Length: 318
Ligand code: TXA
Ligand code: MG
Image (cartoon, rainbow, N blue to C red):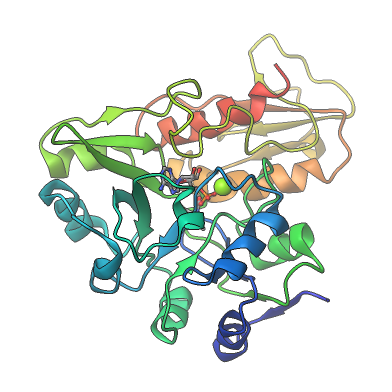
């Protein structure tokens, strides 16, 4: 099988109806999608990604209405978030009904549902009669792709199509939330930062995303999002060296060769840093440097999400 990049939604819909997995654009990162109600199609996602079936998948719906048959209850605080942020980059962990295949939830009591905003994906979802199960379209443990070409590079020969929706506008995965003791809890920092959720809720949700919190906590394997080239945090004591690549948030310090450096945002805007992060990591990874260094973002707003990903990406090389 060769993997084509296409803008033709009907070709991709046909492949999905046949039970095949395909690459899809979302506003966060590209996904590896299949019919979320077809056990064989779901199973193929795990084998293509090399992901253990103990790690459950998000179901993507056009809207809350389509998700209703699969969801037992949607707490009013989650409804409030849904009203404010959906369609958009937030995922809800909610009690499931018997219609959700076991493989989707890895036997857990809740199902993860998301209502994406990417217009191309929304057109695709509107043309289908089933939800799309989709993890990020990277190989297990690797950096998530944020354009169609990077999906093709990671999964070439494994899927017939990548649906091209351009560059992901957020560039980081969705924020995952659920309820515990009548309050919203954040299970994964994501594209919607903690402070924006707090403003809408009128309280600050607890964060339960520690690698060691519980094996059932979502997506919280310790090493993740990692390039092949060893990645470390940049400290001020780090000197410019040959054959080493540097990723800075905004300013490239004096004495660092521009050919080895990349600024993630000219304006120092965290939305732009987020949008460029994974793509830049994948690009720098391909350049054959011995090591990569990346500047640490401040732990505020989207910086919390960036830090979460970079802590996991650098943990492998610590
Ligand atoms: O932005 C996103 O959410 C992207 C795009 C493609 O939608 N998807 C994504 O999926 O990041 P994935 O599989 O790479 O990460 C979803 C995380 C997983 O780590 C999984 O463990 C957790 O959500 N998760 C999914 N269903 C769950 C469930 N029923 N209970 C607990 N955790 C769950
Ligand atoms: Mg992922």
